[in-house]
Image (cartoon, rainbow, N blue to C red; front, side):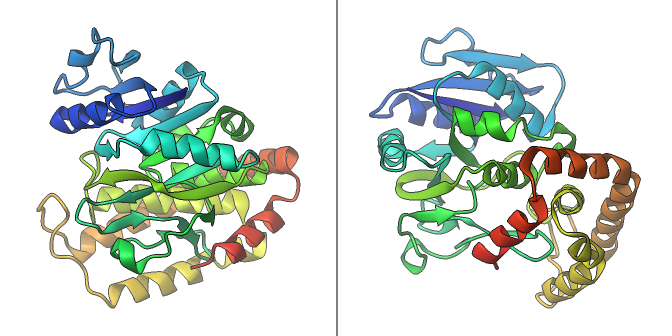
Length: 321
């Protein structure tokens, strides 16, 4: 049996389609929904339906990591999944997923092929930069132009994460103080540090268009992703690399700026260089204030996983941008 936990926030019809695609899996799954203080009542219609095993309603928006943790507390199958509400699962997804877990009994996770119905890929894996900047491998390319062989990858794309219960227990809960973005990347570093690898399964297909909970190119998204990346870097990287973070970041910002600043965010709001720079500055300032907390995490991880920094450098070399 597979337990599938859906994080919902004002999902509407997207949530309905997601649940429907899971109900019609050829290998049945148990469906859990964590409603993150939605205002549209989208989860209410599932509370009394037999096709959904459990609906957890939260009066406060806990963010993605907090909702994931809420689901992890409820799910007890050996194979578990955490996913967005704006997904549709191929009818053979669960069958292919279980088959891959059986082929690789030593692996902790199986990464699905996440793509748009048009044939464009969201991710076939995750690649890492020197400053822990994470990039989805194959993003924006067609499925014919990407390496879709079954292979070892860093971890699962955050939209749908499939893992063994023992791997999740070894990694511990996600850091709910991250709220949004990079929480799954930091979590999968811990999966790797605990000795659990991830296998990419191209036959386990999931369709994902655009997220309803976050907005592409928005300053809010930039703030959270940048802040949480920096927090993770302080926890995981050698000090020599931590001290290089400002220089590495400036190089990356300049390289990204060559392509020009988008005129609008994904929801149509006008973007300005000032709003983008403000979001970045706010992220760095918050990280400075969180230094004592992050240093304590660094020490905790060392006690749990041993020589964290050398292991992380090895992961960066193996899955480098």
